Image 1 (tube, helix red, strand yellow):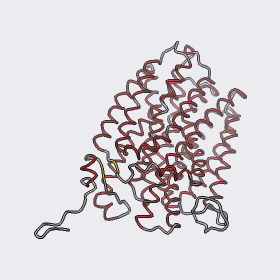
Image 2 (cartoon, helix red, strand yellow; image 1 turned 180 degrees about the vertical axis):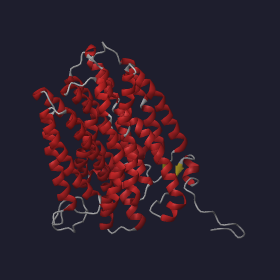
Image 3 (cartoon, one colour; image 1 turned 135 degrees about the vertical axis):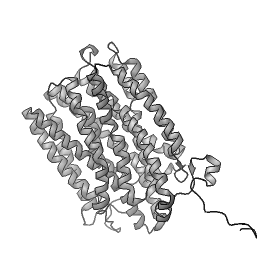
Image 4 (cartoon, one colour; image 1 turned 90 degrees about the horizontal axis):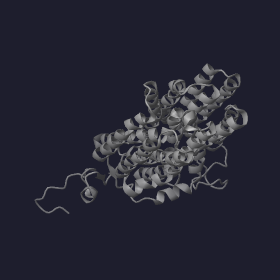
Length: 471
């Protein structure tokens, strides 16, 4: 109660709340992005600033994660590695990047989004410096494999970044924001491939490429420290991941994300090796082509989120799987006919479709949990908080499982080349998988009859059915 003659306390500012004074100037205690007045007055500006520097850190994380997809192009006969060795190497790097996404998701709640961005960005120095040290002929395959595994930490940045940014934006903006955040990160894949092209073209060695990235890692960590914020509402909520893991939708969306992001990251690692092994391209010739698909797939991801915001993520995802299946069928034909122009052209189209699907599937996640919140009878900020909590936690798990698709793609290519001498067999398997993804999307999120996933996350005829057609 205000004492007589004392002016009333000013409205609480997110940047100067009690949490700020207790925990430091970069902690925000009160955050309500669904409140339009709050969002227009101060929320949007803060959210966009955090988005920018989240993208930068995640971008470099993706570059380091996919570092070995370009380093293997430098590794000629003098390194003593077979094509199967190289596919195994990139598969294991992808695997680590997928696995570490789970603890990285928890890390946001334990340390705070800003604090973990600083830590995770700085950790990228370890794989970069290690690769700089061992990258020379005569190094054993086991050493390359061990150092390559370190690069997997770069894959974890995506999970923590998406979980963090999801909490900053209102539901109506999530498709665009998450698409931009992820797309800006994904573009780290073609950027490092372009950098490798420049280095190879200038007759430079792999250490030159690594020398470019080491100072960039330091810049990303410093900028995160200066300009990002932690949300107190996300702190110490590690139980959200447990709750998300119990929900059937987390695993259904994980399966669908294998088809979109798993394809994107798997093809990003494998494209150059397919060109060199199946079509006889030199490393320089392969480098001229490999960056195009990941670049366009990254740039289009925010468009996938925007289309999902407008037309519904489930619909866009469904149609996208139709396109991915058609493109893969043409790739089977091009591979059998050994037509390089057709193969590269359609592969680029497939990359674009993976990017669209990445954006639409991630838009579906907050929509699903918001729908479940409403079905539970929650309204207003309570419903929004429920949706943010579970969708943010589930994103890390979905991202981790989805990235395992990249492991499967590289292992499938490895086996296909061992068995048939080409990637045709792998493409046939991918075509069948996209067909299954189409059926799952339609059956769970667009089909109207009873038997749909219910608010409890389990299938039941007796409980009220939810409609996810608009998510």
